Image (cartoon, rainbow, N blue to C red; front, side, top):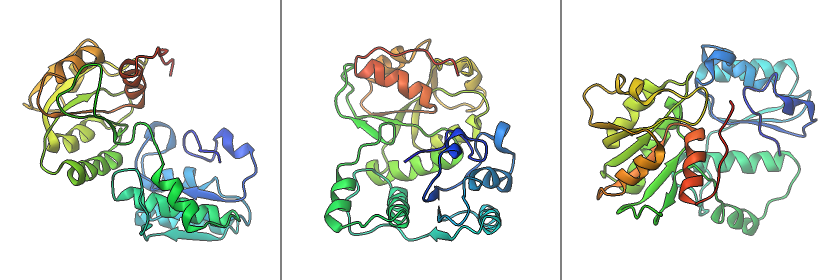
Length: 272
């Protein structure tokens, strides 16, 4: 099973023949490289489709769906859209959207020729771990009074899913939000979405050459309560003193560095 790095049409993973291809929900992301519209991005992503091989897709926005259908037709790939969530199974990932992802995964496996039994599917999803996807630490070296939650939401689509998931788990509770981001992301929009559950922002640098200075993020939040930190370690220390839960989000680079700190493991600076 190979996941494309970015886009699809020009991704290195297309060098490997596939029995089946799958598309998760397409949103505006990596617009600098993939295009500024859903149609352009859908073309890049759908172009992983192979001649006469099944193409399984999550439910898409209308303009993305039209482009996926066009690309599939060109290579005569049987196309199937999954719009019904997987029910009747315990999925060890928070969020209603994960039930749709689970249905997509199952249909993709079936299209690849695997026979799935209830017991196999139940075991797989009930023991599933996905670091950085509403990953909850009930205890940390910083002795957080609430939970510390790590989520890799870095575009508006994933930020909306995060908010919906947060509400389903934590109801009306607000969060101390540790946030850092990199260039080419819609950080202002993401912050606006996340502000709905934010009590106080903690802005931190991201350990990447493309990292946005924390001071630049202040301009994106109006008069929202905030603190600027020179490191994620300081932000984790400060947020731990508050009685609320802490949400750390905005960049996978930030999550990688933070997990190293929390799990007390060494990490390397990204050159990307």
